[in-house]
Length: 233
Image (tube, rainbow, N blue to C red):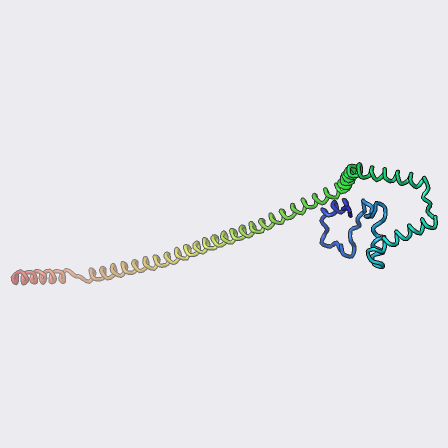
């Protein structure tokens, strides 16, 4: 059974940048555990090497045949020291099966703690940079708000300019109206003065043209007209 690598768990939490080429330049991983084995001591790669040549039964046939060759030719003699080694090997297997999981869990925890301690500075820098990015995004958002504020101020200035323009237009209108009213009033006064002067001149000329004789004649004529009217009514 292949045991998972603790290092891959720690490194999997690290976000890679968009410019990192992981396909051609993958991040190196340090192997914490030894490669898988079979029968407790034979590497699994040896079996896979035979699979491509002889199939599944190849490595077992080779192992049994090679062991038979060593024993039949007495190259490997099974003396008393061999059985001592077998007993010691059994004790080692028992110790590994009994205390191995606890020791493995303790060592895994130590490795994880060491990896976290080594990556603490890097993770802190990443978090700090993320905070800086968030602050920059917030500053950009505030800058966009300032842009909207500038637009509002620009519109307010345009309204103020429009109000000042209309005020000046009304001032010009009022001044022009005053001058036109002055000219109309001036012409009316001149016309009235001319009419008064003409009436006075005509009146004076008429008064001067009246003599006492004509006044007596006019008076007598008026009395005669009155008597004629009185006789009719």
